[in-house]
Image 1: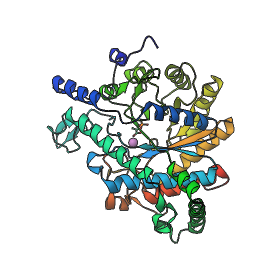
Image 2: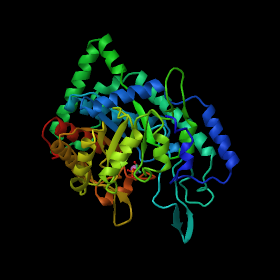
Image 3: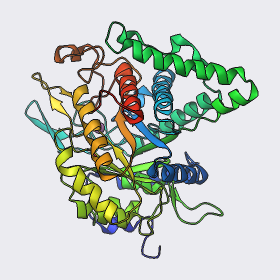
Image 4: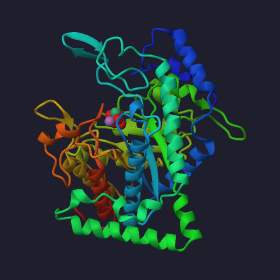
Amino acid sequence: MTDWSPDSWRRRPATQQARYKDTAALDAALEKIRSYPPLVTAGEVERLRAELSAAAKGRRFLLQGGDCAEKIEDCTSDRIASKLKILLQMSLVLIYGLNRPVIRVGRMAGQYAKPRSSSVERLAGKEIASYRGDLVNDFEPDERRRMPDPARMIQAYQHSALTLNFIRALIDGGFADLHHPEYWDMRDFHGTPAEAEYMKVVGAIQDSIGFLEGLGEIGTDLLDRVEFYTSHEGLHLPYEQAQTRTVPRREGYYDLGAHMLWIGERTRSIEGAHVEFFRGVRNPIGVKIGPTCAPEEAVELARRLNPNAEPGRIVLITRHGADQVDRYLPPLIRAIRDAKLPVVWCCDPMHGNVIKTRSGRKTRSFEAILDELGATIRAHEMAGTILGGVHLELTGERVTECIGGALGLTEDDLDESYETFCDPRLNYSQSLEVALLLARRLGGEGRIS
Ligand code: PEP
Ligand code: CO
C-alpha cells in the first residue's frame, strides 16, 4: 500500500480525539508505548483472520463480549476471571447448540477509550469535559481530573498487559473447573419455566467435558487449546499508531495492541481519520453499522477497508435497534451480498436498544436484545446470508444494569448493583441465558423467533 503510512490519518478529520495541553508529555508517553513490547503477536492476528474467514462461511461463530468501558480499578483477578468464565461458558453453550467452533473475542485488555455524544457535560451549572474512558481522563466529575492526561495511556497500556497476562495464564492452566456443577451458577434460573431445559444443556456440556478429561492426555490437550482473543474500539488514534509496527518476515503493519479493533458508529466516516488509519493495518477490523449508514456507504466502507476482498478482514457489526432491523438490515445485506464482499455479519443487539428509566438511568431490556437478535437472524435467513457472530456488553458479576431476564429485574432493582461507567451490561445469568436461547434458535427452534 503506497499511499498509506501509520500517520497518514493525520491529514484527515479525526473526531472524538482527546485534546492534550502538554504536547511534550504526550510525545513522551507515546514514545514510551512505542518502546514497550507488544501485547499480541502478528501470528495470533493472522490466526484470528483465518478463523473469521471460516465464520463468514458459517463454519465458525464469533462471540465478542465484555464491558462497555473497562476500568483500570477493575483490573483484579476476580473480575478478570469471572469475565473470562462467563465468555467461556457461553462459548461452550454455543458450540453445543450450533455444532461449530466458537471464536472467543473479549472486549478486554484495552477497552479504555469511549466516544461521547457531547464533548462537555453540565454539572451544577458548570461545564466540564466529558469522560472519555480511563485511557484519557478520570470519571470523577471534577474539572481538573477531567483534563486529558497523557500518563493515563501508559497506565492503560500496562493494565492491558496485566489483564492479558492473567487471561493467558488462566487459559494455559486449562479450565479444570468447567465440569464441576458448582462452577456453573444456575441459581437465578431456579423456579423459572426454562430451568429444566437449561439444566439439561449445562448437564450435557459437563458430561462431555468429563468424558474428554476421562480420555486423559487427549482430553486435557483439547481443553488446553482454548483460544482467546482481545479487541477494543480503535478510537484514540495516536495511541493506536504508537502500537502499530512491522514485524520480521511478514508483510504490512500490525496494530499489536489487540487482535481485533473496531471502528465505532460515530467515527466510521469514509473520508475520516479512523477509516484511513485502519485501512492500513492487517488486523481484522469491525465496523459498527447503525441506521444512519446507507447501504452504499457500507459497501464503500467494506471496499475501502478491504480493497482486495480478503476474507476474514471485515466484520460488519449491525446495531440498528430491535424496532429498526426490519427496515434497515435487509437492504444493507443485499447491497453487500450483491457487491460480493466477503464480510462476517455480526449482530450487536445492545447499542440500538438503550433506554432511560424514569429516574434517568441508562438501561436495556432483555426482551429488546432478544428481539434484535431474532429479527437479525430472520433477515439473514431470508437473504440466504449467514449471521456469523454476536457482539455483547456483559460482565461476569451479578450486576443490575439491564432489565428483564430470568430474575425478572425491573427498573426499581437497578439501584441495587449498578456499576457501569458507561452502557448497561448483561449480568452473569442474563449473559448465559442469551447464549442458551441463541444456541437453541440457531440450532433449531426457540424463544428468539
Ligand atoms: C460501544 O461499542 O460501546 C459503542 C460506543 O458502540 P457504537 O459505536 O455502536 O455506538
Ligand atoms: Co457501549
